[in-house]
Amino acid sequence: MTDPTSEEPADWPTGRLLFTVVRRIEHEWNEHLSGWELNHAGFPVLLHLMGGPRTQRELAAVSGVTEQTMSKVVARLERSGYVTRTTDPHDRRRRTVMVTGAGMAAAREAGRMQPAEDLALQGLDERQASELRDLLVTMVRFQRREDRPDAE
Image (tube, rainbow, N blue to C red; front, side, top):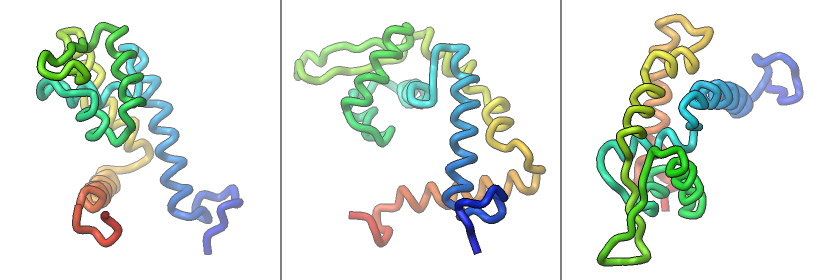
């Protein structure tokens, strides 16, 4: 039986366990990224842009945030010199976002695999880390399925 008020993690519901771990990782990841004036919101945007320019609307959609939120994220990246925004000559309402050389360098350096893996897998042995990764991949794939029962 789970007890969300217990001090013992083994008594907690799965949701509370996940939330607790995710918040710790997010905090530590933001601390890591701060060395490049990045955070957990801006870093994935740089990764998306490494594949080529995108509109703010496209970035919002792939990031799962509103266009207003994405505008703020892009503005911060722009102030850091990591992206540029240009107006589409065919549609003056549309803004295209492109990663700069500095943005590519920051994304490559900040995104080195080992620091991220070390933050996410603290306390797990190799077998546990592999099992967790498999479970997370399954959960992410399910979330992306358009034919899942709760998809609109």
